[in-house]
Length: 152
Image 1 (tube, rainbow, N blue to C red):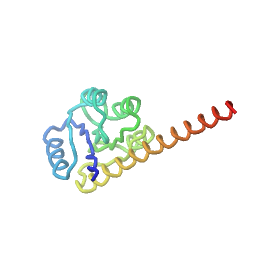
Image 2: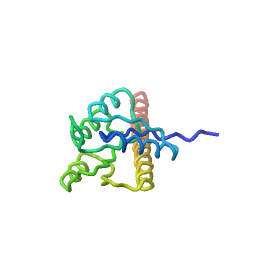
Image 3: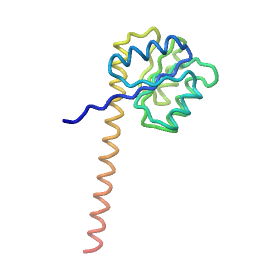
Image 4: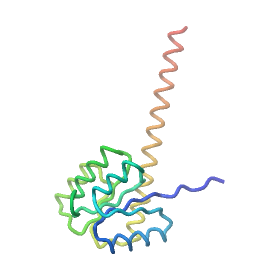
């Protein structure tokens, strides 16, 4: 029997007590959670380890969340990012969606809703990966057919 893949989540928020509590609650729901407290740490983490989903605050010291989102999408375009913020504006939401965020949730957020969104984001990541594999296989098949035709 195949073991179900656990969802790896990276939480990025400078509100230490909030993010630590959120991390505990997500772990209780079966998610694998890592926590960093600013955008610079998030980018360092993503360069080494690819999480499935990032839950990202916007207003943090150093790099603003939108900048972190932009860099994450450059580094690891398949990572799904959910913005979770208490300070986001409609303009921030529009910018985040244009940069490829999976969702934009305002604090305070219901934990069950957040878990659903994380699972949906993970499913989207898997679907994109399967699509990429299918296209790659099609390309290999087309190349093989071309080689065979040339040899005939």
